Image 1: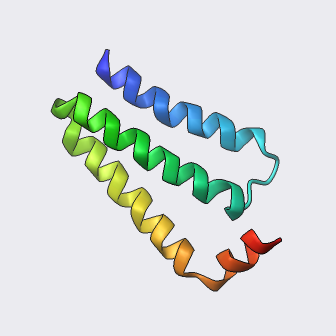
Image 2: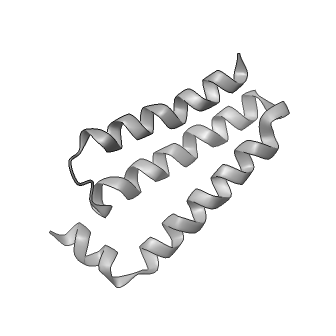
Length: 79
């Protein structure tokens, strides 16, 4: 049911990342931003899983914020 749908979202992103031999930040961060959007929509549809989904969103947002503030990210996407 609902948990399988949630896990599938993460599985699909993991599959995209693993398809790249060495996924760089220029590929990973936009994908994570899309993942956050998908999780927010999922949370609206499945409020019973809001706590777990919110925890995942917070962790991904923490990572993306750190990466975007890092000067190396700017170099990675300029390549």
